[in-house]
Image 1 (cartoon, rainbow, N blue to C red):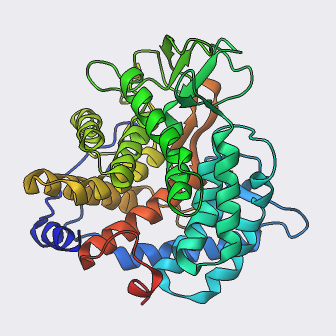
Image 2 (cartoon, rainbow, N blue to C red):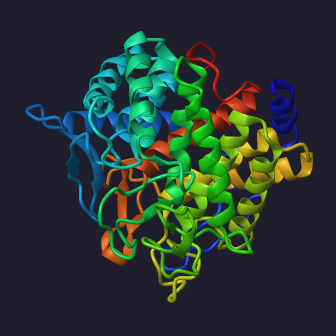
Length: 417
């Protein structure tokens, strides 16, 4: 793997072009290459500002900031986004090697510890606990973190329906999901990493089988002939038969919701990493291709590729950051060197566009502006959102490691300045 990463890094050539941004401000291209260290330092400064703003009298986690606002909206540990803030702090520790990040990263991770010992509220336990304690354990080896991760994996496993072969996403009544039938959303692919990890680090082997089953059933039922993804699929909870494919956060049942397609790219790349089964790698290439083929020129997607008023539709920086990170890992597994180079160049262009035209800077203490959470519900439209920041810094670290020719999961020692 190290040799392949070194080859990819050495042959990648940046080719930046003049770009336009639709409903956003006029864009200007800069011939300079992306300065990864500069962007990581920027993320550290912004996170330092945020730490000062978090109330001391409650267990609050920053989730989002409204357009033109400066104040974070805080959530508790039960919120599906609660793992992104501590996960971001762990990444800042990894990138800088500065031990000052350990205390806050540990502090906010531990807010989420109750998730490991309470009934599953929904499928997002991977986002919550693996992003926080998972990164923490990878970087510190703290055995307490490992225990929490393993317990959480067992909790997530309680949502697995063997009749269907997937994990239930929302164990409650959600519009258009025909509750109490079984629903699975494409986001759920990311949570499989928690099950894979646990199965290889002391958990039951059945966790691995559940993750594989979920990936297989989702691959069979979640994608249209052109490899665009439904947001959700509803199954008969007894027979396992597919009832329908629908959207919840996208424009329409037949549209390509940008972040949902990003979850698919990221998810199947990760499943290939964990299993080594090339059918997942092949699927990752296919879902990545349709995403890349339909991107606007500046490579930052509108919230839905089929939204009716493009170019006067909101963008989604969170999808761009997520896909940039996914493409860098996908490149590391791609034997076709030309295709691998395309993925790296595209990912770096995405990050460069984000760094030039989507940074929060003095507007607020988040990293990025212009993400879209749930437009059909009128929620978090053109906001700064914590998961955009998480995947932005993750992608920067992955690009840094790629350029250094080292595996993405390498320890802190190889990255600290």
